Image 1 (cartoon, rainbow, N blue to C red):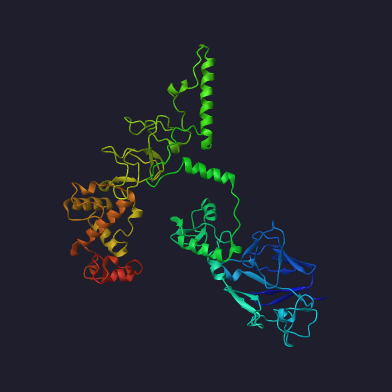
Image 2 (cartoon, one colour):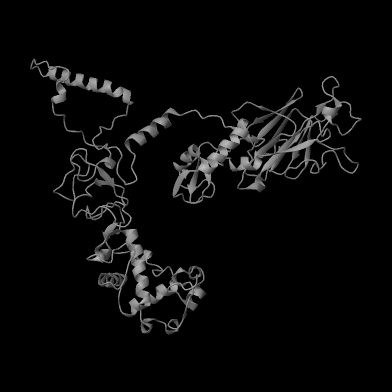
Length: 555
């Protein structure tokens, strides 16, 4: 029985000769080729089908099969014809290269004088008359036909792709390098394994993905699909977009097929953008407080809806039996009825007359119609926008984010420690006061020992630091030294904690030598880099040996 075709395993360079029309590959032992030690290979991954001189690939896996690193075949797709030197990736993972499984196809070439000349064939063996493999050299007596090594002829690295060609100047040149796989790797999305479409970059890892692919991923978890780092932001990557445009112009066949729009997805996006979008200042871009909660319609249908509403009003007037027939435009002058209660608590605060929470924290104020609302960044519940009014505190004076703790006198989030307060009035959690002084465990322990010796708490330390701040002995970034009472500045919990740490550092600097315990910590030399030293956070011995409650002297 003659060999129909051959598959070269590019991982170990073994050659598999195939003699049957259907050749199955998978993880199960019932396949013709079993790959049992790879968890990415399906039980029945793919089938090579040989039909009348043509070789086809039919995928039967869950993850699909990649051909020439450009065409992905799934089990729902029709079979794909393969040619000589085509590469078939059963597994293609950039994050786990050792698990990749890739084969190269070698098909027989039929010598026909009527169809091709000897110059086009470039055969190795002149005695071969019917069937030969131009990509395989003559087999030496010491090598079997199945274990011949092709590494001398084929560069199987992922950087280049070998293609047979002949030119006029070099008629005997049999292979040429077509670079571009490195660029294709950069522009391939790891989610869809295709060329990226409208790529975006994630922060802080800067990995790029298709915008649609990451939107689907983000709905499940807000992490990077590649490195699993928590994503803090995303933005369009103009550099990759420019490279992508240039690459697709040079290789138009690599352009991904356009995705069909999903009507449900598009409608959900439109509803979200039109009604529930929140601006960068925390305010709703569109006031939907008094919407009836019905489905949104297109703008061109609004006029028809208004006419139908007017007709309904006329019908109601006729049912009253008073015999008065009002013209069609008469309801315009009739005061509209009160809006129905808002079903979604996101769009009604505790001071809205129709809100679901009737117990208002400020009895003297109720939200008028079309009242703008802002979101508390702690409990994510709305409150009326009254920033322009005197003695109303709704935002941090340092970071300018909105919080409701002072306005409602209590934030609604469970475990809130006072998301907005005066610097002097904060009660910081003990878990946030670990390594209080410049994140240095030694300097922080010196301050803690001082408080323990004098029977003081962290709360007492905050009050003492605020007193020194009011007297002008201490300074604090973000607080004007000329303010009447600097310690009464309205800050959020995060900004207040940062200010307290800065004040605690100044307290440690001004401590007397006799107050420092143990005594061996009093005569330490200053570190050249002072509070800016990075070694103090990683090496405890360095933090114990040198004093870091000082300014940097070496730059």
